[in-house]
Image 1 (spheres, rainbow, N blue to C red):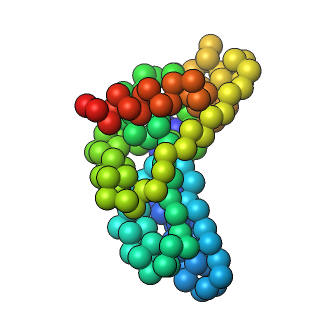
Image 2 (cartoon, rainbow, N blue to C red):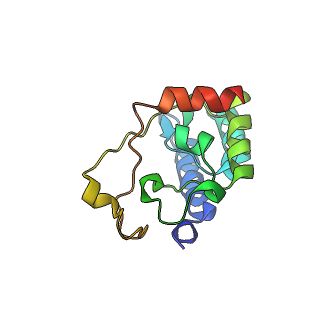
Image 3 (cartoon, one colour):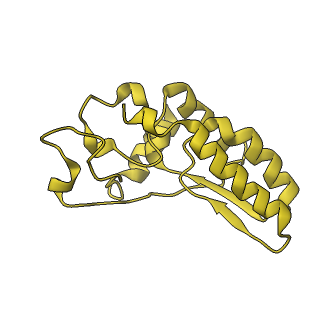
Length: 147
């Protein structure tokens, strides 16, 4: 249910709005943070070319390492926004990183008190959104890239 509350279309529309501003305002520089939707990569490729370097894109380790199919029910430690999407999407993000559409990987480190994670209920809708991963982001990403 949580994944359905944040469909890729929401992310794509936000990116479209940002790209529109970059096109409209020649002095504007913009950065897409936490890209999770591989379906937005074609739009971003085109927009980056047209912007002359005024648009950059990042994704996060959890979008490159995990897939929605692998997140156990109630494992709220893997709740983030945008959410972790499917395995095919994850592979698309790796392609975007490989071809330079995605410029960098950023941690999106978001620790919180354990009680905010709703671990006992496993309720994704009330749990804190953010992954505490600074301590393992490099190793996880490196391992995923090597496989």
